[in-house]
Length: 105
Image (cartoon, rainbow, N blue to C red):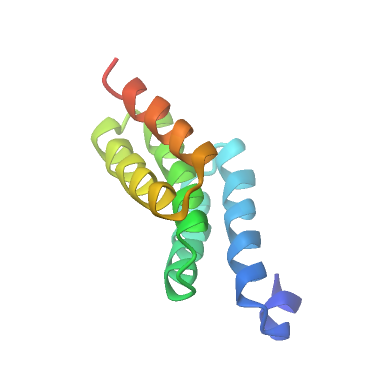
């Protein structure tokens, strides 16, 4: 990550930040996952990369839902829905819709 930052490839940095967030989320290290995912979202917004905003928001939603914070998860899934719809990311859109529905069960 440090080398990517130094290279100036901000798109690659935003993707690696998201993937690091995925790794931390999968090991139930939610605070660390959230830190990386929020940084990915901030950078992706600067780059107008709605697809990555959506995918990072999806993972934040998974983390919140896993912690039982369903209202917060819905907010993240709503952001993912909006971003994935705007970017044409049908994969992300489908996952956001499905996981948002699970927060009501």
